[in-house]
Amino acid sequence: MKTSEYISFTIDRLPKGYVFTYADFTTEVNKKEAVIKALNRMVESGKISKLSKGKYYKPESTPFGKLQPSQAQIVKDLMENDGKIIGYLTGYSIYNQLGLTTQVSNTIQIGKKEVRTAFKRERFTISFVKQKNTITKENIPLLQLLDVIRYIQKIPDTSPEFSCKRLLAILKDLSEKDKNTMVRLAFKYPPATKALLGALLDELNESILAESLYKTLNPITKYKLSVDKVLTKTEKWNII
Image 1 (spheres, rainbow, N blue to C red):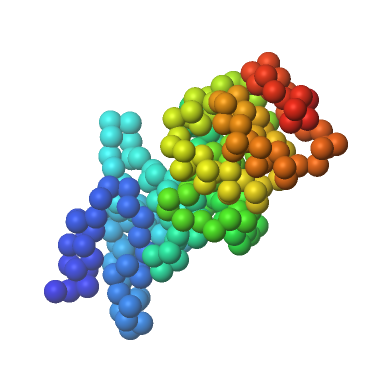
Image 2 (cartoon, rainbow, N blue to C red):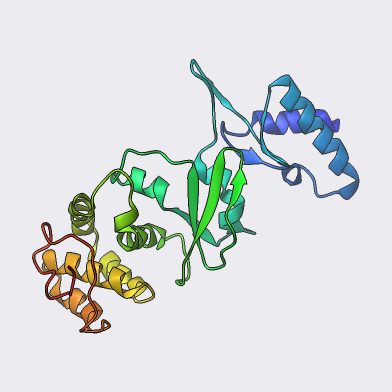
């Protein structure tokens, strides 16, 4: 089978919106140029689209035009390395996903242990948030919630009070195991994050879990978060 036929056959079997590079088709150095040329010809013919240098995707056509890949596909190379998870989506896309805002952003934020300077990829700005915890597939939803708590005052087109109400509903539905894991993960977050998580858990009568966070805080430090209209025990947590 010719290189172009092999690539065409493989792409036909890929799901719509899947992002790939020439490396997905060959590991042989002498075939690299042939693969790149074949992919670029497919871009010209409209069979595939180019996301950025060396990155292509199989577009999904709608009456309104071709759809972009999902944000997870656009940055998947930054979140996985040889099958190991090293990052996760956070920030704006998660605020939207959790119903905290309806605003759609052109910035994709990624939580990682090793961060780098923000850069552009197509129409998106890719930025990074430092994550001190080990990232696993299981704890990503909890890390995303902790990031929401950490940046609660920066969520666009909403208020900290509204976000707190939504967080209370989400935390209430978590299993006891997940709540315990979330508290453990919170130990590596800033004090204000621990204070707000503690106040949220206190509101849900999870006093034992909340107390473990309370013991880590400086009793004279104040946290200006403007959530006292929703949470009834902010004074205990020095939240003003």
